[in-house]
Image (cartoon, rainbow, N blue to C red; front, side):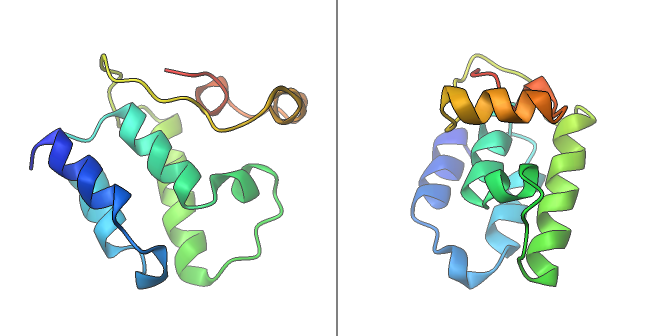
Length: 107
């Protein structure tokens, strides 16, 4: 799929339908770091980083895998941009908690 098609699919996705479509997007070779981070935050990555996660087993499995793939460099950084959806206070809090900069720095 093209990058634009992946983005369009993600933007129209209903997260109540599970994680199959987001996982398909993440598994596509065109998926880059910007798109992976967008999916992370759309999947409630904030709660995961805050260690306040109370989601279902499927969510926990999905978000753990995505977190590890991002940290381990599975997704390449390209010229595409993503603004981390956190304010300065949240970024400060997460830095104090030792959260990796990859989740706190705009691309």
